[in-house]
Length: 380
Image 1 (cartoon, rainbow, N blue to C red):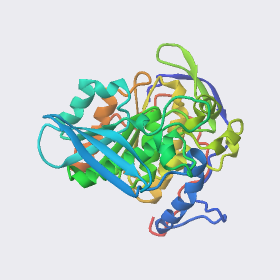
Image 2 (image 1 turned 180 degrees about the vertical axis):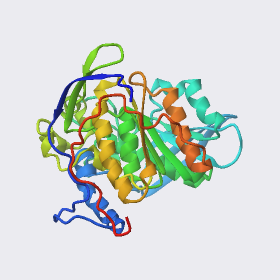
Image 3 (image 1 turned 90 degrees about the horizontal axis):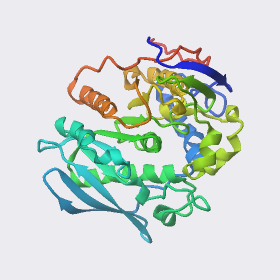
Image 4 (image 1 turned 180 degrees about the horizontal axis):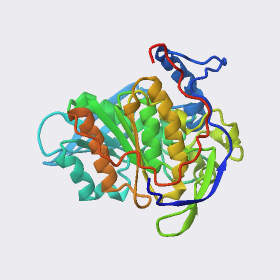
């Protein structure tokens, strides 16, 4: 493979935990045991990392507030019987009428969401693009204290950070699509970029209605690797380093669960790593998209945890459901990334061949930092 970046510093803080080992020390041996293990992993992978997540709402309403030829705007109101939160959902309609696959994206607060070429890809391929502004649920700015935004007022007894609040919004959009009956509910994809990519991965782990989960360039706290720190010279000859948990918690502690503060200088002691979040999406389709020169996202780390997570997909007999790719360039949700997601959707819905650009590693291969493999099964 062509090496487009040169690794200059590489530290491994510890081996990746074995996702097949139960809390009592026994190791699962059959796919029928995976769901029990997945539920057991929830406390560490979800609640430690992101806090306790607000539940499915007691109140869920969706109201059409405006509809044009190419777009429809809705207001979602959801929460408890005592208190609700309201936010907008924008549905960019495809070129042909009918029931089509849908992509849910919480990044309506980012400028790329308003670029015609970004939306055009979905329009041409008859895929609904469903967008909402996640910051309507929880603020994305550091204040004094950690919890600012309306969803915290609805569920004050839960400990979720902003990522958990935003992930809750993904599920409410799926609820709305179910109520409206405007999408193919068998083909729902989640995507998002950077912090929005973190959110998409978390939402995909939480909501099994997402059949395809596509986190784009998530950085630390999602699809990277806590136990790998690296530096590399990018495509323009500039040396950069990867983001660590300490970096993330220093700048954005309100995104995460409070318990992660205890591990900011000892990631090797975490009871999980990012391969286990990826594994929680199995057996559904996970597509991890990255950029070669986005060194802050830890390219080696995200590749490493994808390789580790692939053992779970293999165990569940769906190795084809874990995909990853690196495009040239830097940190952005590029039209090229969107086209690759559409390629995956069309492969799953119509049998369109997958692009040959998947699985191209743009750096020197590193030794795997785990010595376990998926359990052998009797019929293997």
